[in-house]
Image (cartoon, rainbow, N blue to C red; front, side):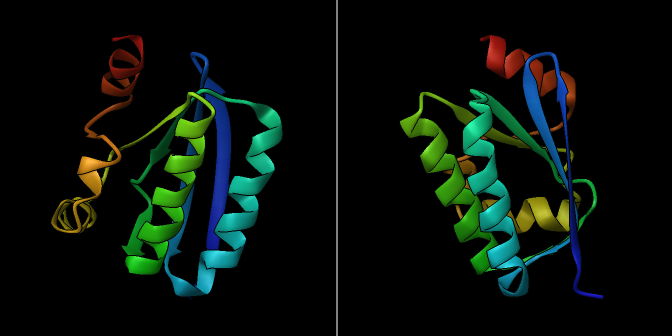
Length: 115
């Protein structure tokens, strides 16, 4: 199945987004609408738990980096954590880690935002 489920919760003043499934061209509109809806919530620190992302393509990366740029314009910051090895490798090869920090654990995320 090509469905994407997006869960969100707040933990330690950080918005934690947990996508489940594929982040690709077929989910671009859904993902953009989701990120657009977050503008009203005014979170400064946002992290994406990538543990349940099964696939990501360049279109998905584009949507995520655009969201990161929007956050930066509002003095915010986006991080990723808990990436599967193949997803993390793809993001690093694509240079995403130069734009969005890729961390190991939620504790690393909390430390990153406090630093």
